[in-house]
Length: 308
Image (tube, rainbow, N blue to C red; front, side, top):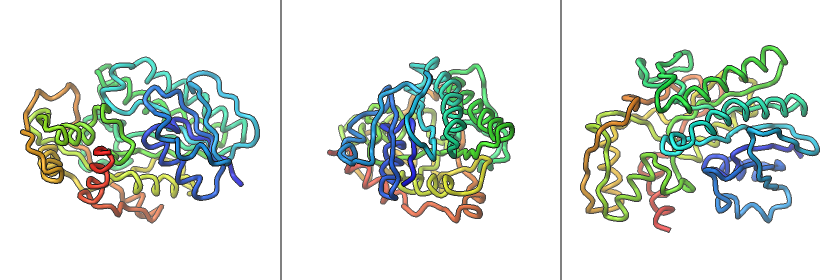
């Protein structure tokens, strides 16, 4: 039985990943300091003898007893509302945390996966974004703490691969949604659903013409697992290539929740990307992966979760 350590294991994506790995017969160690994660996300797994939770900040030295076959580094705030509140911790988890998890993988002779992000592309001048695009990032802007932490993480992972021969994987995650998102997360999906369900105005920033593509969490986790067991070492985009304007998205959520909320407009935040859409040709070819869950189906599940 193989053992996988998932940092950020009590987070939105991390908890879904732990669940999938348990289901596939892995022993799973979830590590989290609960800055943005929550124990309720992993409560249903804690009775499983193959599941262990360790409360720990990965930007400090990591010690794990026994064999570890996979180290999956998913610890980091991922919402602008979160990382702009704690920019230094965000930079530390992306630098020191990445260094510590890579060191652990090397010591344990484990395979390594880094959760990177579409934010490495910044406010892209190319659409959709292929893995070969280097990005357009403001390193000292309000989003730089997250964007540059992830860009550094990628550089460090590739250095460990080239210098130490570590088997590294890098997943660039595009906008993902689904159950276990926090309602105060600050991102588009929880914001719009919470506002619509409570009959409050749905807040669109700018004129709503900026685009995003939304991938349902189970599709993303399937792609992550395929990448984890693949022979690929360079970054791979995972996301849904179906692009929507933010205004279209607000109107869709309003319709699905049967909400009487009005849509209101506020100024666009600084450095907010104007477009965001993955080129997933590499994932299709190399991993035989593409998303299956349609936006309406995924949103219906997510709305039900938020109602509860």
